[in-house]
Amino acid sequence: MKIWSLHGDGKSVAPGEVVAPSERLNWPATIAIGVQHVVAMFGATFLVPVLTGFPVPTTLLFSGVGTLLFLIITRNKLPSYLGSSFAFIAPVTAATASAGMGSALAGIVAVGILLAIVGVIANVTGTGWIDKLMPPVVAGAIVALIGFNLAPVAWSNFEQGPLVAAITLTAVVLFSVLFRGFLGRISIFLGVVVGYIAAALLGELDLSAVEKADWIGLPTFHLADFASAGTWSAIAMFLPVVLVLIAENVGHVRAVAAMTDKSVNASTGKALIADGVATTLAGFFGGSGTTTYGENIGVMAATRVYSTAAYWVAGATAILLSLSPKIGALFNSIPAGVLGGVTTALYGLIGIIGIKIWVDNRVDFSRPVNQYTGAVALVMAIAGFSMSWGDFTLGAIVLATAAALVIYHLGNLIARVRKTGADDGGPIPAVGQLGGDPQ
Image (cartoon, rainbow, N blue to C red; front, side):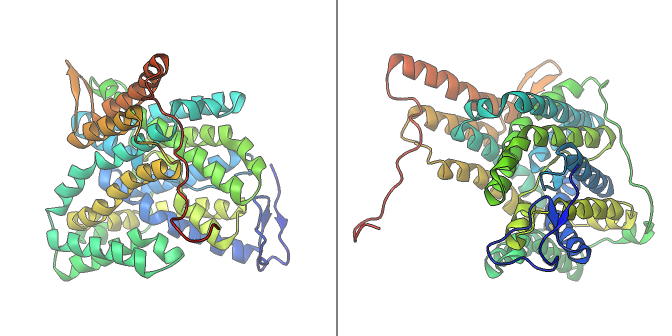
């Protein structure tokens, strides 16, 4: 494992330079940046257990442990923080309601194991086959449908405290356009703070559990349950999440490589293995599934510090925070109205991220195969399609993901054999300027 070398004078980063993963600033600066990474991930990471009913301290613990495991497995070459993945919210919510928390945890374990297997394959063969399985129109549809499928959950919380929810939502949007840089990237977290204060002023806050909680104590652990009758039906709902985690991890590695060194791309397979191992461990003992975090990529881009040393600090800090039951009780005291406001924005943003994948890759929606890949998948997810055979049920996310994959690949095959022109012809040409002198 690499030992960090000191970058420059250890105090600052010169214009045009970056602190590489194998370098570090002096330890006071490294610790400060590591803590900043915790702040960046915190707003999103704590929301997942709050929304799914999982213990917040347990999720924080496995988030920190997962980050350290990630650094070890990637041989300290890839800077990354593993926070709670929002892709798990819909299947965890559905599985917990139908079969209990143990079955939901079993689903998380299944995703982790499958992701690790994909990582092993990618480490041996490369990632080209992933791009073929999930071209932009399919990847965008899968990400978008997971966000839009959660719309009813946002509304159910929103209507429990409409005024507080509206204040929270307004704050989230306002902070995102009012601030630039780091503060703008944590607008979700700031919106929750504003909503929480508003709820307190309106008398909608119950802090009795916070007062009773100890300052120091071990997190609450729950075991994955593979024996219950509804577990295997629940696990099926989780399988599409693997595709999202693959896309997120691959995207993260490529982003870091673009900002530092192209050789980082060689760690893609190890990154998938590491996230799979971290997710599996979390699922076995009651934590939320993990993924690499875009918020922390933003911090690296802003600071130009890509040192893995900062992530060792961040992981250790998260573990320390998890050892305070009072912190967990504080987050569990967030009123439904606040959650309704923030998730209205958050779930919509997940959907928009999927659409952004389409835009960034210039998906040609004049082609019927692309049209129906996105259209059918989104309607199935939003409407909540499901199919049951006895006790075995396939939910909307599974069906919509399967529909996107089948329509795209089978539709392309038929269209190309028949030469109808309905297949995916690749990205549309970039649109140039209108009028004026060429640039």
